[in-house]
Amino acid sequence: MVVATPNPGSNYVLDQGRAGRLVQDGGFGQAIADALESPEMRAGYVARGRERVRDFSWETVVEDHIRAYELAIERWGRGVRGP
Image (cartoon, rainbow, N blue to C red; front, top):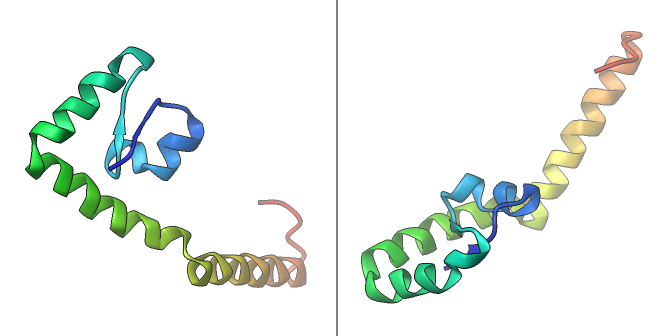
């Protein structure tokens, strides 16, 4: 289970707190204690984290990049030069 402070990177990676616990600096200790005391909560975060990590596999990243290039090439061919 991941515990992190909210910032653009952790918000994105942890799917706005669904795949890990987001807490302010002073909340780390309590968040860790909560996780240790609640196997159900911990298991839920772990399961959602394992699902989320698939979004960052090399296969997924490569597929996303290929789609982006294909879209750019298609738009370029149609004369579309902006988003």
